[in-house]
Image (cartoon, rainbow, N blue to C red; front, side):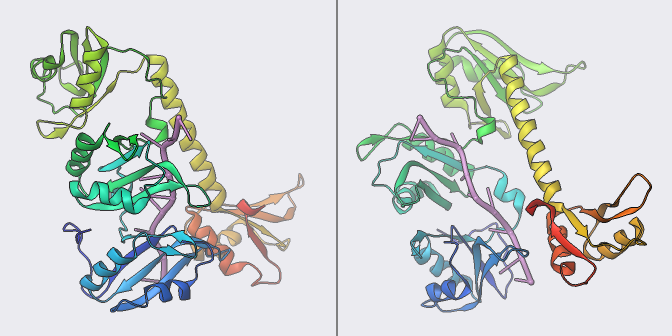
Amino acid sequence: MAVPSAVTLPASTVSLYVGDLHPDVVDGTLFDAFNEFKGISSVRVCRDSSTGRSLCYGYVNFSSLQDAHFAMEKMNHSMLNGKMIRVTWSLRDPDARKSGVGNVFVKNLSESIDSVGLQELFQKFGNVVSCKVATFEDGKSMGYGFVQFESEESANAAIERLDNTMIGDKEIYVGKFMKKCDRVLPSPDVKYTNLYVKNLDPDINEEVLQEKFSEFGKIACLVVARDENGTSRGFGFVNFECPEDAKKAMESTNGSQLGSKVLYVARAQKKAEREQILRNQFEERRKEQIMKYKASNVYVKNIDDDVTDDELRDLFSLCGTITSAKLMRDDKGINKGFGFVCFSAPEEAAKAVGTFHGKDKRVFISLMSYL
DNA sequence: TTTGAGCGT
């Protein structure tokens, strides 16, 4: 893997992210594993601050970019405590990690291809940031994997060149990675003629779309969605007369450039189908919010009778931003001796538990999510 | 059949 050009690393230290660690790996294990490389300034396995459990990732810090790069190349996909580790540049910006740009999904892989083999197969198309074959507990391949390229162009080139090609004894599938909730449930036999096209520049009109899509077959009807002023809403529909042409058009145009943007082209969903997908996404987000809320809420007991909500809030505000602090009271308004303090983030709640749990004879605190 | 994980001191 080449040194990423778009990433500015501090002059003094360079961090490698080491993921997929065996839970038993401790700082010393990681240090020993990287000990043969020069230029290491420090090593750490990250742990849950309240339970001390390994988060199964860590960092190896170097004083030089070259040393870090060399160690990454050597140690990526090596075995540590019986598990294959993944070593990449540390990328702290969550948006950059979660964008999904350049992420490729591969399936129908022969069992003999592991992460190393997958990387070898794909790196000729561009910088591979991270690459992994999904495995069972015993390390056997599940027959599918992921390749995260640095750029979308590399991903498109790999899809173009490798999808439906024979690798070993199998014809592999290579496509853009799609989150489960965004994916139309697999029904490959269903014939469709209508395509949904998004990421249209404002100046892309029906004529331009017609020109782009007509090479794949006869178009029955084509429309760009517009608001009441006639301004493009950035998406549209292309309805072909025959399903084969629609499929061909989708495969060729999805991910291709039109104007300044990369097009997204997929089978147009029926209204009910679209609504179902939106419902699923909504439900998933709601669950996430609930989990986050639970992990941000701290249960406090052994509270003296004369303590007020405000005092509870003041004490805990040392650990973060409080969204609510409430003592439970009986119907006469007498404090029941316990209450809840909710923080704006799980990290703050964990800090509160670490700070106050067992530190004061009168106070017993534990994370609500452990109850 | 199979559409991850997820970034600190």
